[in-house]
Length: 163
Ligand code: FES
Ligand code: FES
Image (cartoon, helix red, strand yellow):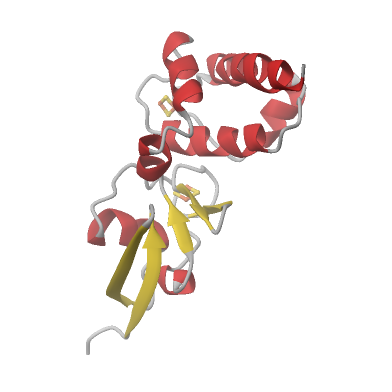
């Protein structure tokens, strides 16, 4: 017996998408397998690691805990779209400069999570940056450099922007 399917329509990185998906398919599997958007990674598949982070209607979510069918009518943004739009160019440059990535597996999720913090317009302490990133695991344990990079962007953009 074939698995039940649903027809969904959504916007992915600004483009209209209409697909038939298995009802049980996760959003991250849909993005990777059906749309070839492989920047969102699959790690734990249990909501712990944050490798699958994507944005749905402007809010970051776990792509492994979200079903593709739940995104019918939604606006989905992946690391590819956010990167192509130039939205995280400064964060990407700071990650590179600070060596804030090693294997890069966690990096898309880290960048989207960091961007959420930046877009809040707040000036978080180092401890608050760590707290905000606490749902994103880096298996290479590069946390120090990751926090350094985010702190640098906040210092140069948010604080400078307020002045
Ligand atoms: S793969 Fe989704 S949180 Fe780990
Ligand atoms: S850079 Fe390897 S998991 Fe973070």
